[in-house]
Image 1 (cartoon, rainbow, N blue to C red):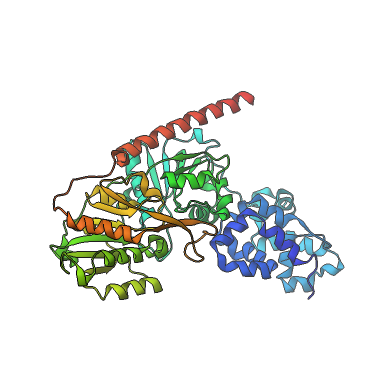
Image 2: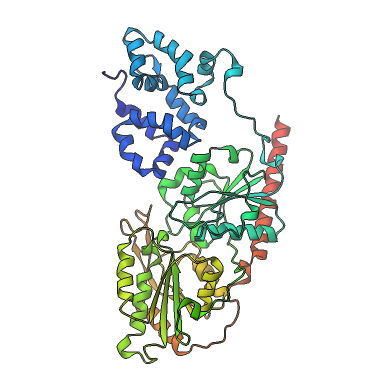
Length: 530
């Protein structure tokens, strides 16, 4: 059958220009080609499967307006038109070539119910579809209309159980709020299937809903967008939402620009991230809000438990392949170690130094990591560990070593570096990005670098961005110097006191109290004007 109406290219342009649709395509790049090639098919997917996956779709006025627009030359709305296209039986019974009246009558009397389209209709269409308002599905009204009407406290949203850095960000935020006496609950939002979910340390704080005045999203901006797309706006209603978003590069991704509409302000954990987000946020307030670092219990395991030599001066680097092996730059650590301690001319002896490279066991094959492992296998002083350790054992592994080395190309915050300092380890690290807020000589050696373009496919959403290329020779010199003056005695916690849960929690509370005063003043203004 020949499709009635305008050319699909025009409709595709309108549909793909909608912010929510752009967000869904960012989350589901596998749909992009289909959306361009078959816009009607993509729109039908959104109405059916997409609406079940993304609860925000029926809440979107823009999407409803798109579906409610008249499809030129047919007299039908786009929603009616799409249903008609996908119902050959209805086309046969009510051909619109005879006029749209008979089909429209079928649509309102039967089509809406058969396809459960209630939440996609505007008020006029709801009236036509059912003269009895009691038969129309309705959502419960919100319990509060303003954030100031909700109790003081925080709904922390993120990877409550995730064994990765951003999961630890949420858990540390919870500890900081507890230390400051701020009421809170945690809403767990599961990461992808390739991330461990075994950290249950905050399980007693996890709830099904967030009743408090403030939302703090300890997620990347894109994952914040996924939370909204999948769960809808229920958790946003009458709450003040804060994006506690990590980001590693100097340039904020332009593709994420629309996500600012989901927040009332943004917190950045480092000056580096603050600079990136502030340059893109427009009128959305941005605040520097360092994250807490707290070791908690550390396993008593020592070198023998990890199969490490007892007397060697051990350098350590731990990372997650999901965080990009190019950004973490493990190959540079290996190269710096090889230059510092060549086995044929090692003044300290071939077994007096060692390098530990630790990462989560990869679920997919990574060619660069495979090359690193092949090279490491040729040197018995290099110890590769591929496993996801409980946090207390991971910290014990750090503590078993003498120096933490991170020759990263960019860090938003640098939690593992901060934890190493808190354990009393010396640090050799790139003198660039988020970690420079707390890394200072003499407890940390900052490696010189030059800024280079991020190459295609090295990091997501990085077109036009730069990051650091650390000087491997300089890092090797720092490693040689440290090994030559190594002492067994530790100096204790080397991290600035401003990163304790008490200090960070107090800063959280001050800012939340300030926001509370601002909200109360705004509510009084609204009441006076009305």
